Each structure stands twice: as structure tokens, then as C-alpha cells.
Length: 296
Image (cartoon, rainbow, N blue to C red; front, side, top):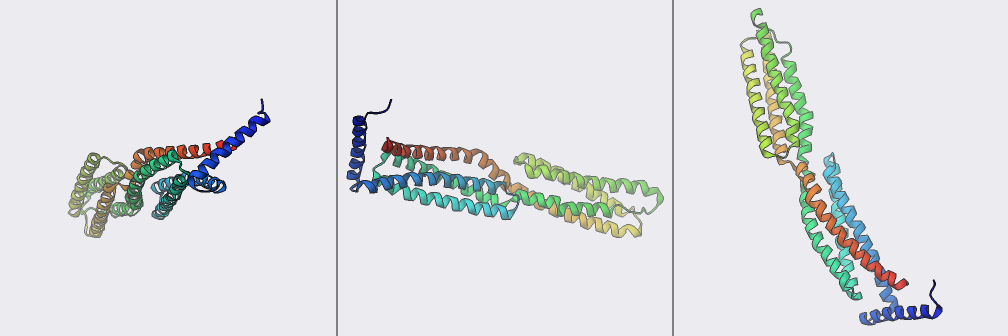
């Protein structure tokens, strides 16, 4: 059933009285109060949008597959958080002028949570742009792979010093190549793992494989003919190059910046993002109630 004309007039007068009272309390005219209330609602909406964009850009920085993309997304995330701070800074005085105490409390709650978010976000972004796991992976699948292949190729055509040693030369060459491949196989799980004890165990296995490869190479020197001496030298140089790259891979992997930034994003950051968004949605809802009350 619709409202009767007298009842409508009563409601309109009541609402006008409330707005006038607010305006009087603010020391401003009704139009100014209404304009500020509208600006408060818009700024609160902008605040939620800017925060969501900033959090999303930070997540993309963590997931980026290149240094350039990671840095670009991190910059976008920083710009987003600056926009959030500007929005929050602009909204505070408006709420004070309107004497919206509950809304001001919600904004303060968000600011407190956002400060926690910013501290964590800076830590995550600093880790993300280092990309140490990604760099280790590139070394493993690029230069380290090439050095391992060069080692294998150098041992392919060894000629024994005597026919009786042919089987021995082949066996030692195969052992040397196999142990280098064992080190290669361990690189990927080392890069992916965040457990220090597990990484240490894999490094010990790598060291054992290296000793086996060098021992085999040393024995081959006395078993091959003069024509193959240069191949042993080439194999030794390739092994040195491979192990130097492996040490660099381990160092980068140990820093684990990609793994750590992802873990923080999925756990601690996700929790504080939810809290920030809850505060902003509650703030927006509270401001929308003022708008709704003014339209009834």
C-alpha cells in the first residue's frame, strides 16, 4: 500500500529536518552537506577500487616470469597504494565535517590494517623483484645445460691408449657423464624447495656426484691416447664451468625470493587483504545508508 499524501509530507519534512540539523551542526548549508556526503560515498568507492587494484598488481609482480614484468607490476602496485593513501587522506576530513563518527571509526580501522598491509607488501615486492629462483632456473636450463652438454660431447670420442682399456675408458666416460646429469636433475627440486634441510641434503648429493665425475676424469687421463688428451682438457674445462654455474644456482636458490614472496602472498597477505576489504566494504555500506535515508 502506498503512503498517503499527509504521511509523505511528514516524512519529507522529517528528512529535511535531519539534513538541516546536520547542516547546522556542520555550520554549513544543506547543499554543501549533501555535496560532501556524495563526495564521501564516491571517495569510499574509489578507495576500495584502488586498494583492490594495488593488491592485484602486487600479486602479478610475484607471479611475473621476467624481471621486467615483475618490476613493472611492482611499480604499478606502489602507485596503487599511493592512490589508496590519497583517498584515505581526502576522506578523513570529509567524515569529520559531516560528524560521521561511526564511518570515521571504520576509516581509522582500515588505515591501521592498511599500514600492516603496506609493511608486508613492501617486503613481498622487494623479494619478488629479485627473482632469484627464476634466475637460478634460467641458469640451470641455459648455461648450465650447455656446459653439461659440452662435458658429454668432449668425452664422446675418446680413444684408449691400448685396445685392452677400451671398455674401461667407455665405463669411466659414462660414469662421469651420468654423475653430472645427476647434479642437473637435483637443480630443479633445489630451486623449488624452501626447506633448508632438504636443500642441504641435495647439495651433499651434488658434491658426491662431482667427486665421482672428477675421479673418473682423472683416471681417464692415464687411459686415453695422445690424440684424446685435448678432449680430456676440454671436458675438464666444461666440468669446471658447469660446477661454477651450479654454485651460482645454489646461491640464488638458497635466497628463495620467489618462493618466499609467493608463500607470504598466499598466507599472511591474503589474510590482511581480507581484513582491509572488510573495513572498506563496511565503510561504504555505512555511507550508502545515509544516501538511502535521504531518498526515502
